[in-house]
Figure 1 (tube, rainbow, N blue to C red):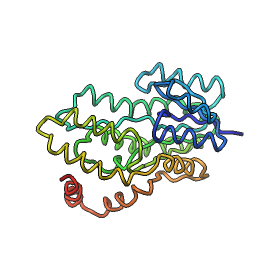
Figure 2 (cartoon, rainbow, N blue to C red):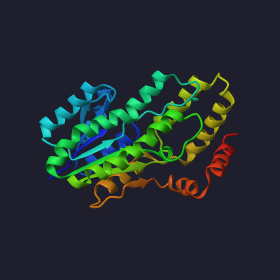
Figure 3 (cartoon, one colour):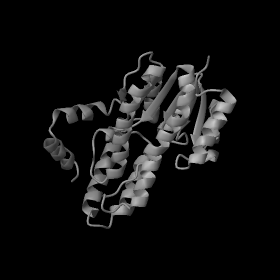
Figure 4 (spheres, rainbow, N blue to C red):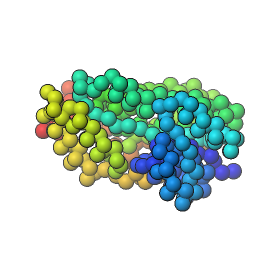
Length: 269
């Protein structure tokens, strides 16, 4: 029996690559996004478009209801929708901070709440939460983004032990730099928020560092393959780190906070 998959954030980056990759492998895939018109090209691969704005509860419930009405179940939820907004904590408005958390944390949580009843009923389910290397490491001028990803890590740890008894697996994916619109959008956002404040010099240094890292960014399809590996495992690991994230995460484990801070800031010049 083909598995029913819901992939959020399917218009670009990891979400789009994952929806296409899984559809090609024979999964029944629903690609969800706020701008449904941008999902049309995914239909060429058999992906079924569905509207979803993760900041609006009625949109979230309608999305889930549509899929359950058509398929009677959702076997796999892959939470790819995300926002990478940057700026010094002092400069970011609380309204923008709340929007970041709505997209990266509360929208994810609400989707999970709504798919769990059917997964429990079927004694089967895979919930995949896209975190980031930024869910383990905090970088300057990214307070709210990193806060949201650190939260996803903690939420997933708690949830994993809550739902294991029902045959449901919770998996965290930790990409490093990945080729997508998010890098450019994030740097543009950083300059908008902090490019003219007392943090302007640090903002320029951070952007210079991020630009240098672009060359090491991997294709989104590599993360799609990692996600596929995780959901096809009979006993998946709690976390799967991308190849370009592993060295950095290893160094983080070795160094003290003070030494790691020095290493990070040495790259911001």
